[in-house]
Amino acid sequence: MTIWNLGSINADMVYDLPHLPAPGETLAAHGLDRFLGGKGANMSVAAARAGSRVSHIGAVGHDGRWAKDRLTEYGVDTRYISEVDLPTGHAIIAVDAEGENLIILYPGANHALDVSHLGQALSSASTGDLLILQNETNAQVEAAQFGRKLGLTVCYAAAPFQAQAVQAVLPYLDFLILNEIEAEQLRQETGMGAADLPVRHVIVTLGAKGARYLQQGNDPVEFSAHKVQAVDTTGAGDTFTGYVLAGMDRGMPMEQAILQANRAAALMVTRHGTADVIPDLREVRDATF
Ligand code: ATP
Image 1: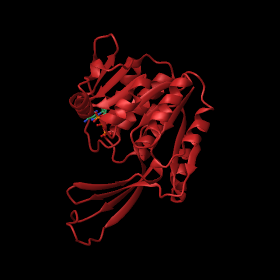
Image 2: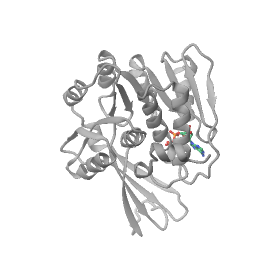
Image 3: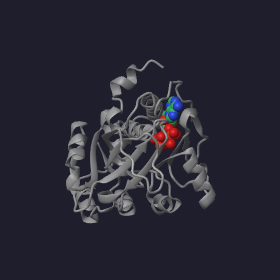
């Protein structure tokens, strides 16, 4: 089976600064690193590292060929990533000596995907394939509708959180994943608690406390997080989601997929970085915790 991911692709530009700039200040950076990022790209890399066949659907600008090449290196099928006349999505991340940060996010090409391109990509999907969406691209509702019509298992990671975006795709979803803060926002803004959602599988991730699985009609199941020395939690949620999808893709019961995702995400928080350091299945199996 294939995991189809309509997902964002970003260049994360990390500038090391002595302090965060004040309004009007010009400040020289000590260094600059460029990483592959974006929730979509992270999830594609995680699912591919977990051993699944992943086809990424998205868009980059003419300056984004390197990002496409990087995804290919990580085993992701990039044939449905189009090149558009807008800059590649990017995050300008300023980090000071204390590790405090300031982020400017520019969606760029991530919001310029042609819907006909999406339809063309999904016309190669087979019934039973998985489709994952997040809230960093355009065409989410169209994708969810196509997915449902084609008999795909439609999954949504509700980040960055917007109640309206969740509500728009909700009728088409088989699986929803969100973190504790997003679940609370959803409850406050729509009155729907995670347990009341009309979705077959819901996972609420709880950071260092683990995760909660809510299957419609069943009691919630709690999973404790592994005890690790966390140094950087960036990308933990995306790694978790990618591994859950890979488990579902392999036909694992959801509980088993979550156990593996919980291990992968625990290992991820012990590492600095995002897409480039997502662990593969062997590392996840061999981890000693
Ligand atoms: P992020 O936005 O930082 O990628 P998130 O907010 O989407 O993450 P979290 O709920 O913070 O998601 O974390 C996802 C999963 O990562 C958790 O369910 C857990 O398995 C793992 N995890 C996160 N923090 C820790 C930690 N300190 N120790 C062990 N595991 C952790």
